[in-house]
Image (cartoon, rainbow, N blue to C red):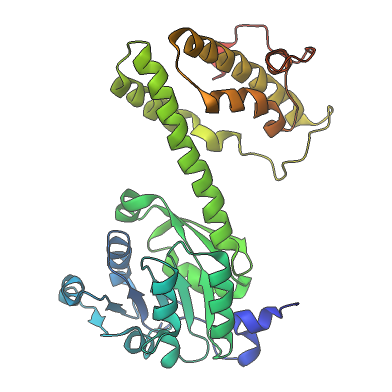
Length: 332
């Protein structure tokens, strides 16, 4: 069944102004629901919003520091939405988000047309689309806007926020998000913000698993794995870590005459050499390295240039001339 974007975004419900308005032009209040480890530091930065801040949490004591700084509080999400024109939601899971948005005391009980609900919790993308459709029947806009950067990023105001919604609603949210996010990104339609967050966290937690695998190898080799961790943090801060190779706008194979073909062929050669050496060390130390094996097999294909000579040889296939044979260690 096709879905009308207006039914999801609320665009078809009239010409009510979207969001809280400009900070330079008598803006309306913003609201924040959920003042936990992530929500509280984000909300603290909204105390500077010139239209005012309305906060809500199931623990009344969590709102007290904000009230002391000039915010007002609402006992329920519905009370927050009586005045706030952008309501941020940072609660635990899909069930809590549903209750906050569309429950008996939820935002939709009082929110006026043009109000924006920004869900910062990581939920299912289908939940975001479903709730956006429910909001649209009230003339309310919902964006799924999960964040990345953890509690340290929230404390520093350096989070990334990935926003799913129409461009108009995204632009209406940006002045508020800019108070606490260093990198706002318009991911696409409703649901796209969550899909981007899930892809980002797929990399995040696979890399944690890889870190454990590398630590097992280092420990078996008699190394201090805490020192290894210091090296990883130091060098990733310089090189950008995995994000440093996320440079293309497609995962399709790269044509031989494309600029990126030479770049990634070179990196593939370096990577395959080092992976094969690590796997050889693991074999000698009797440490199983399944992620390393997969990485050797798939590195070149992931880059779009196909496996190199070392990976082909490891797989028992004839080699090619794509491997790197020089000792250009300075490239890493």
